[in-house]
Amino acid sequence: MSSTEKLGRSTTRNPSATGDTGFVGLVRRHPLTTFLVWFFTVGQAFAFAPVVARANGVELLVQPFILASTLIGLLLPAVVITRIVDGPEQVRELWRRSFAVWVSLRWYALALIAVPAVATALTVLLFGMPVGVSTSSILSALVFGLLL
Image (cartoon, rainbow, N blue to C red):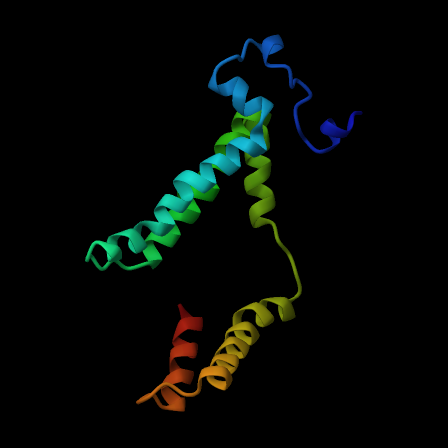
């Protein structure tokens, strides 16, 4: 078994052998380059759209654009390139591995409670308490954020 088969990748890398000489052949020959080109053009265009809009006097929320950048700039090309290079079975394997994460409860607690608490504490230590905001309102915002 070759190393590419162990990694779950197809061993047919010669596009002329499969008849793929167009865009699909390019993606099969250079999957990482294709991903990076997509991310740094399309993905970053979504991420920087609010900055460009603000420079032109239009205020836009940043969060929807960051979400779109993640979904369209990272997730979409990962799935499409995996499908082109390795086939539909590997796309199913990608989804399975993405959601089959089993760790102990303490790691979930660390990610959901400790990280936001430490980030908030460091922000208050470095920049001080926000003007007109009480400690109870900060704690209630943290708790509300955890419930979402």
